[in-house]
Image (tube, rainbow, N blue to C red; front, side, top):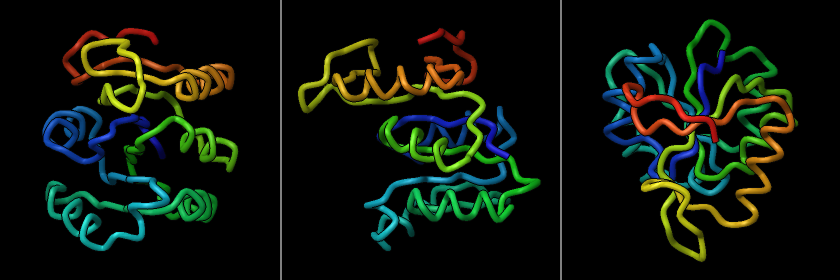
Length: 152
């Protein structure tokens, strides 16, 4: 079951591994990215970053949907990590249940406008986040689990 989906351009990194995973009791990190899933070097580095006793999947959106439908992650506490909100919309449209979305790091580059110290969005990302909210999924801003959760 998905415990949280986090939009974070750094994907698996120190804060996710050392703070989010223990706080959420994560058993699987699932990076869903249609480009990175084909890069063996990046996949290997992400596997090395995971804590002992957890699994890592670096897979395409379609593979994630197929695996969830097949019950592959039943009984596991899954943290989904994506770079952009559009991926979460595709997962949801494919039947993946997302209980909540956390906005992590979205760099202020490529024409994005700052929303907070760590989050910058472009118009498409804003529209995609609204689509997620319209589907009834709460979106929060919480850099680390000990921060107060703010509604987006």
